[in-house]
Length: 535
Image (cartoon, rainbow, N blue to C red; front, side):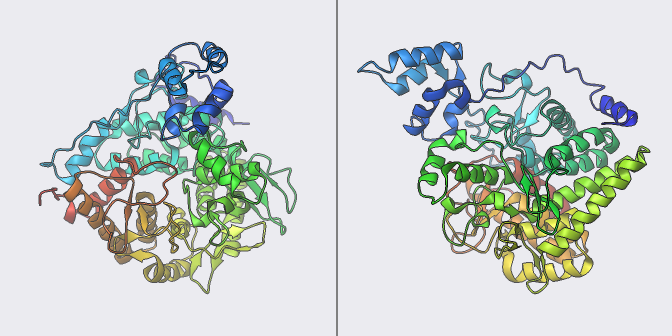
């Protein structure tokens, strides 16, 4: 229950925004809406990318389309592709025809892209899977034509560096609205993403809003409380050794979080791929689907981080793992709620959340810190042991401010020895063929590492990571005049766009979080800010 102070604060968040124009969303997913038509389209691979059909807009009433399909599919000359094209409008890649201007510097290129990647509420197609939003927002680019949750934080730090506080304000209001409307921030604003969230970055967005004068942090306290309640739902009812949705209580009574999706069916945007993966597993297919969905909720889709040894994607067991990054972000969420509650005079909430943050910090230190290795690891609650896979998530406790100074010092040594590649901060040490593994590097991990090490006064290492990443991005920009979603950091192909099995889609240009992190690093480390592709 919100206090009167919190309810007053909640009203202030949207006080200057008229939301009456936002249409009510139809939250049925394409699979729920089109039944066997959906399954037939996806399994027959009518489109190369499984996301194409789920993003289509029906030209007619969906019920009438399904009735027509059931009637016509029995005809001997029935053509499924022709039927789909007759009854659906394909999604348009709005920025697909964009061509960069080689005369622009890298900073100028990124600044120019913000408007190209901005979507307006009035552009939302009718009756599609896209959930309406009240205000403009920035998308990653390419096939990703919607607002993605954790991506957006890294985009926002770049918007701030570009001085685009107007877009930060709009996105701040969108995220607050999503939490108020759905009780959480979906993976992205699509109906088929509603059953899961993404790493809970709203608390870091709120820090950004406050820092740049977009909105006072205490005004977002109700939304922070609501998001915390979503992640902790059922925590009070589970006993030692039990789990419920996002929450796990270990055998010693420790309460921590995991990634989760409320559905246990193939992801609609990757239906055929998930069905194929489950066929290669030795577990119930619905367990496999849940774990694949939970990996998508982590943002690390896919990686050896979630797999058993070298068993491949079919051994993904995300829900059995307590991730160090997720729990670090949850620590910061609890810490922030405690601080803001004290600020608005709610001492009971301040005390409660201070205690929750303290217990979580102690649990992370106890279960996830490895003194011998000098790093933080995920924890396997099912097998009651630390995971042995060292990943870029090891820097999340520094980013969230819960590591001790000695731990930060040890981690700096470990990163230099094991995760620092020629092109930047590595994702993992294992080359599995999945996109969230070596040799690929990703913008969000660069920022977590740079900001985390700077927080603990390891400025030289932070600067080294930043420079290596800037050099990598600049190398591709000079030759291809674009930024992409991931890059290869090592080997003969260092400094080229990344590869690997990329969640069933080709490499994407754009690209929101790469633009954001790189733009911020160019501001913080300006020696490369004037780079032109022809230089």
